Structure formats: C-alpha cells, structure tokens
Length: 75
Image: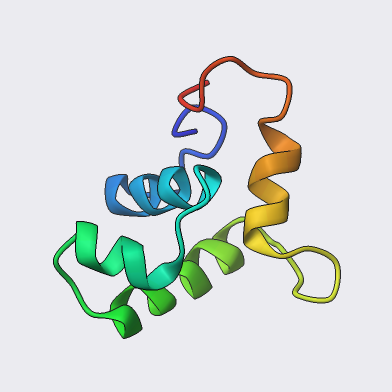
C-alpha cells in the first residue's frame, strides 16, 4: 500500500489495512486505542489524498478494487 500510495503516512496505511480486512470504524478505534471521530477524520483525509470522490467510490470499495488481484496488501 505504501509503495502504491506513498502520500499516505503509516497510521493511514494501517487504517486502510483494517478497512480492507472488513473492520468497521468503531472496531478500528478500539484496536488503535483512539476515538471513533479520529478514525473518521483519518478516513476522510485518506479519501482526499487518494482523490476518491464520494459519488464515485467509497474508500472500502476503492481498496478492495485496487488490491483484489494481489496476494499482499503491502504491494
């Protein structure tokens, strides 16, 4: 993920990984010991950095489409 999208910082890559694996925002906030609002803010920033328009794609859909043919999320 960080190779394909170097504009993402490590904490954003971690959130993308959890989303890709199917975890919900509330679950991610528990894993990262942070607030739900913090995860929501990071999701918003990730969406902007990746240039995803809400009407075209949801972040989770983008991640699943982008990495559907890879064996590793880190590619």
